Length: 316
Image (cartoon, rainbow, N blue to C red; front, side, top):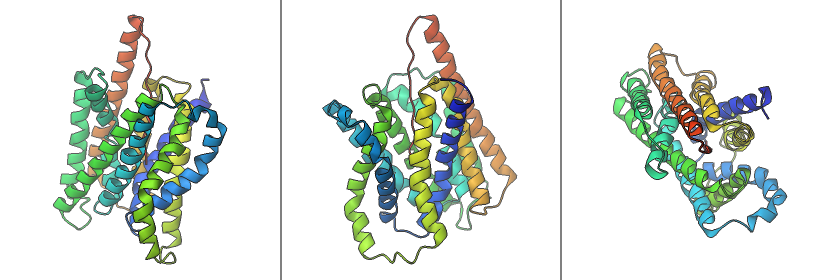
């Protein structure tokens, strides 16, 4: 299946992913750090549970190794990711958060080379350098310190890099699992595992939380954080990935930071600074290099008659 429908799915999947970072900043203003992801993932798990019912016969065929990897996806890719994301977004602006999260493609490239044996050539190494440069430009400019100082901004960015590392682990684990398990099954399975981990601290905070305190905007942000980036975004991304090479889909990853910045400007009302374009351009250049490296590797493998298969998914 090729055409506009597939590319539209890939585009909007990345747009939904990108909206999750600034949305998390609104969530942190109204909900405790454990209750927020518990409610978000519970909503996502409930909405995607029909997938478990539809493909319930395939659950019996999941090996012990794959169950361990799925557990890692839930524990690291969702639980650790959520905690790093919420902690980081409490210290930095939505703009900084969006730019730091946009280093994910380069991080996945390094992780794939380290853990999966993928080739990491000069182009990918340069992409990593460009991503780091883009983050440093925005963080050291002083334009987005949020009145708290550069060091607070840097600390928040380091926590956001923890979220990037968690997302990278999620992608690498998922790449292993999707060779034997239907990709859409990972969405509810990982969500329920994360809900189980968050249940004790989340319910403890819920017992002492005034559910009437958050504003309608904060409740809306929490609902969107669960339904949009993780639920709909992942569904659309898988729908597109099913019909195109991962190297083609990688070109759409540039929509993720663009979406995060746009939501930060429009929803959060954050000020635009020209220095953002410099950092953003460096990160986009890194993403383009990663996509080019994937395409180049695919062409080389095809010339040698080797099969090429890859899938990459991100949590938000």
